[in-house]
Image 1 (cartoon, helix red, strand yellow):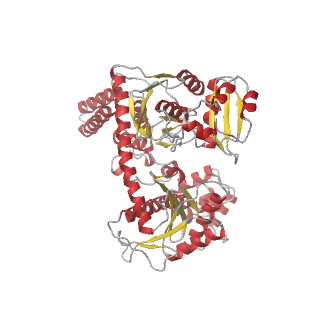
Image 2: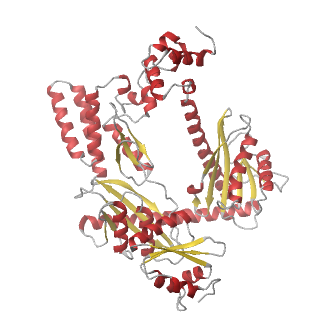
Image 3: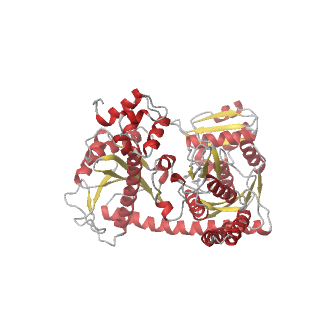
Length: 609
């Protein structure tokens, strides 16, 4: 048995023979493993048995300095608590998901004459209907695109919809029927909404039957233009149906397959709702070496499903350890019975085989990418004459428009590629507009002050999109924060800003470094720099858009959202409001003369009528 810094046997004797969760801590008080047990004393004692041969377990026990525990009523409750604690602490000896975001839905608004369909992620508090969850944002956007082609229900935001005086581009390309300006009656629009809902409920066959009947009626009425539109809708809907329909299946289920090759495990998830295949997604959980695939699959399912919508059936490609406990925990969390099945036949067996094949393909693709990433990391080490190959790289970029809505981005790459869960954006404030040096300094200070406090991992190489000035800012920040061991590199485009002519700036070198255009190291730097630029400009556009959505009316004391909307509707836009007199403004329902005066003064200073 490995020596520990505490009396393990005394602690084991104090543990109850009840279900619960135990947390193993190292000498720094960090949680390094969270586990659950049917009987706490027996489970924890097994770690300190002299006959333990598993190298992973021995390595874990060698670092244990203390163990905390929580008693629960049932093992299912222990599994739920274990999952919550793993999400909170991210212990390095547990199976962890790198992509642990909430999953997206399609949202249909309620209590509106012309409801909207849209993308939704996060808490579902707003009244309306939610369809999903979908495995990825891409799957949601693809479905919304299909819906727009067949059922042109608006997808614009309410603020955009409420302030239109003429149709937008979506009407021109036949993706919307322009309810904002009254080009479609509420009854016709409601029919399109009903058909879209039926499609999302898996009733596309019934929708086709209704559209065929409408097409025949239009033909009999000699309305051949309407009949042609319906014919095109039917053809598009049939193509979508062929692509998404799952033979012989009407309900909700997921297909989950785990496969391990060369020490890497891929979990493939196919989502089927209302008999339609909503898409699939590959996951690569982080697990300690030599972890059995079945254990990874069981841990993944707990991390993935607890706290989210879980279907009544989950098909898997192998039996998972303690399946009854997992079913009980998922059922308790979901509020309905959940069955996990691995012995399936016929069509369901083919779905499981399809998931396994997709997992194998994803592993092969990842291995090829990682091999290429490894070669590029080695080339970078040689090109920059680094003492060791970098394990973690961070790149910063600044984006703004003439100094407006400045945003800094930080993207992170490791030996496997982009680590998107560690990306960060910083809204820059309190600087002179357009001062890129000050913006870079603020972003670096905010980022590395957090890391200095232990809220993350320091990089081996810090890449700055810029030249000597930006590099100098980075060096000063690192010096002020006493951050050691981080190499700083500046990358700027050549005089003509063409790829392949980049100049590299290293503080310890007097001359700039120019790598050959075919250099693998340069290609890696270009990829990271371009990703930082993309992430920064996306954040900048979002921030700028929010700022520009505000109007002078937002600053009028006593003018709430409802009356503000009434004023805009009455005058057809902000420009007309700015030209209106006090008497005109006071005619708007709910607007007193005093309030009208304040609105007028907002646009015309303190001048009175």
